[in-house]
Length: 191
Image 1 (tube, rainbow, N blue to C red):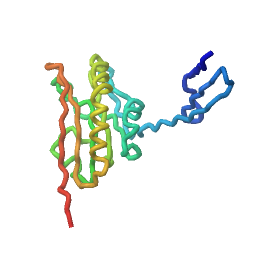
Image 2 (cartoon, one colour):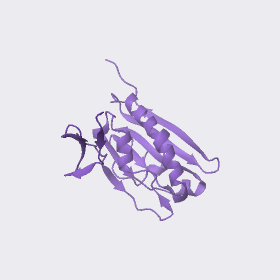
Image 3 (tube, rainbow, N blue to C red):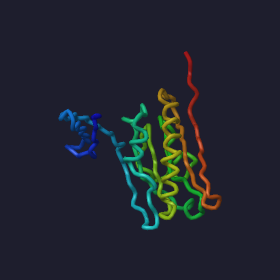
Image 4 (cartoon, helix red, strand yellow):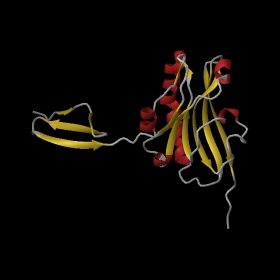
């Protein structure tokens, strides 16, 4: 008779996920302690009932769990100006590296105004029209998060001053996604 293992659903226990593996033929219980770090959410703006955030902190954290920057990452659910939403071309997700960069009010990107304090490594989620939430979430899960994971891996040793961003947009008229990179890093100096 072959050995059969049963995996029971995770049980919540004092803030950690615990998984029990029970081997019926041998009668032993093995305890596997699975800890998932959730990227801290520093801000979450209230939004209209017609809008929705396309992804949550757990999905982002799970997808980026192997990133070297994970302990430094901060998450914002931010709703700035809705001009992009009204025009049908809007940003829905961004990852940023900020190291003594120009303040938001001096940087020529208007949608960074009125943001909470910024940290070195951030992920910003913007609301989308509720009707498009599932489509955009699927794109995030199948494409955007893997691009963010690769972008973070390429910048694992980054210490330059300035900022670097990877931003994801959706265009309703074209029904298409776009990725934009914006880099404003000072050159590295050699001695």
